[in-house]
Image (cartoon, rainbow, N blue to C red; front, side, top):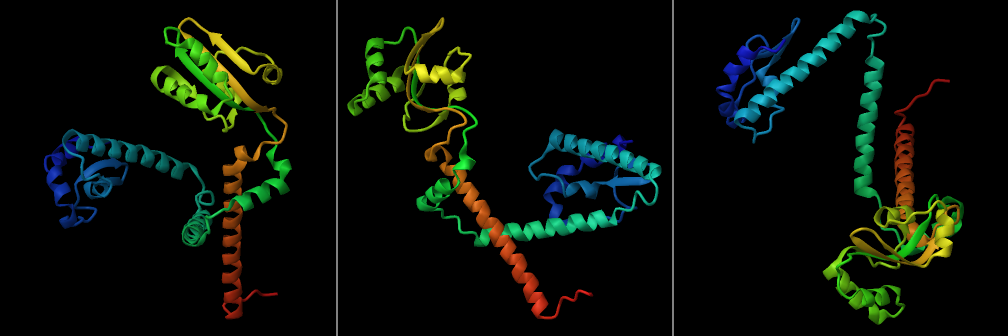
Length: 288
């Protein structure tokens, strides 16, 4: 049960308490302002102050306190119900709590060790070496493409020039294509050396096909239309799923793999060093 009368009273001086929080002395539990009670457990104003954001004022403060008290009450009700319905053996969670605490402390230390000591520089040579030695790890799960695509309204100007530019292999035609897209395209992608998932293109272009692999093998320049737009696609290259993924598509993935291996090596090395140091200093005894 949330005690709304006590809540209303405390909110009258709440803004003052917030500004004076650093001078506020926590009352004893039996002397504080009660916000909520569940059976014989009480929630006091000072319990909530630490959770407050300093910028909360007025109604925001009232809502926060009320919601906090209501959430606390629900949790307490469920906890007390569980306490009543579990055996003493079932309620003995000391081992689990100790294990969880140990895991949290160890994780915090390992995280700090990694932040301070992990070498995050990964060279292109390391990436290429890993790629060449582990081709089995880079089997494509989806079709990928190198592509240029443009979406314009049917009313867009110079469509004939656009048709020339998007098909062109001349470097000199890329600049006018970029300028055109900046001015008139509703959507476009001109990074022809980047690999994309074919499925991502299908989300942008109304291509209909039941056999994606055959479609890629049999189409290079694609021009489509719907009620309002024209679509132009130049497939510059593709890789079919189940083939080996290209290095440029996997570069960031390989970098993360290498860094993760370094992290594991760093942590395992730390564990070994700490153990051996304690062993050498006779701080560890294992009974046979």
